[in-house]
Structures are given as C-alpha cells and as structure tokens.
Image 1 (tube, helix red, strand yellow):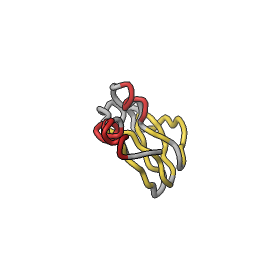
Image 2 (image 1 turned 180 degrees about the vertical axis):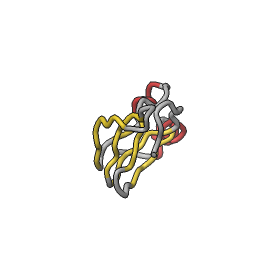
Image 3 (image 1 turned 90 degrees about the horizontal axis):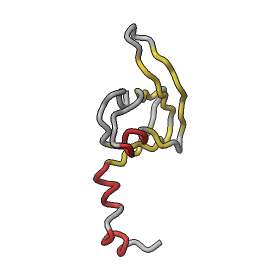
Image 4 (image 1 turned 45 degrees about the horizontal axis):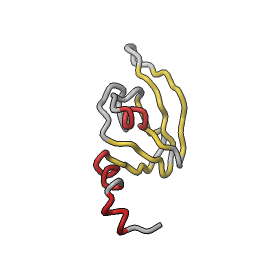
Length: 88
C-alpha cells in the first residue's frame, strides 16, 4: 500500500512510472476497485489539499516510481525568496 483509507495526509504523489490502483477494502477482505492510474497522474490529492483523511487505499499494481511532495516542500515552493532566485 502507498497509503490507506482513513490515514492523515502528509504528501501528494506524482506517478513517474508504473500503475497505481485506487480501491477500498471491505470488512471481508475484498476490494472495491475504482480505477487504475498511470504515469503523469497526481494521486493522493483529495486529502492533501482538503486537509482531510485519505478517501481510498492506493496500491501499486506493478513496479512503480512515485515522486513525493510534502506539505513542507509545497510551502517552500511558495517562498517569495525562492522565487527571486528562480526566473522562469
């Protein structure tokens, strides 16, 4: 599992490669599968940006590369001093 339904969110992820499934585990151990996501998809964003808890389990279906962005890293990107150093 990348993250579990009901957990606090500390990061959002970008799928670099591989495949990730969003699902919910039932009491009997079975899974309700919602969708599979591939490279280029942002995952875990609902709880991350709402400040709530995770709304689904995220499970890697294959070897997967994820890029993690924490709340702190996102805040660092908002730093006006950083923007003075980076000219786009």
